[in-house]
Image (cartoon, one colour):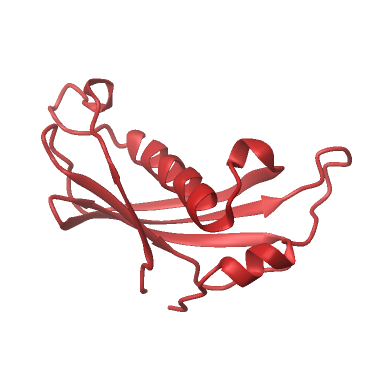
Length: 131
């Protein structure tokens, strides 16, 4: 998978568990932060401004992230659905893979709760990288 988008994130004190590394649940928060940055930087909209729901989340852990690590989340879009936006991620600590993940966001009409097609403008801006 190619990852055309990357964002650097800070490891916060609250991210660290009693073992001295980033808690496994925090990885999902890192994905959320990367997803929000992607929506703002690539699609020109905040996740708080559009009706999307997280329909799927998968994380495969490779190694722990230490408290003093430099964290980068790289992501790409492998394909587009009609109303779904799958994203694939690589979380890196000090340049080394710490986890891979996949999420699926679904665009919904907030008044009806039904899915709706991704806007054409989004389709034009998204670089579908394939796997």
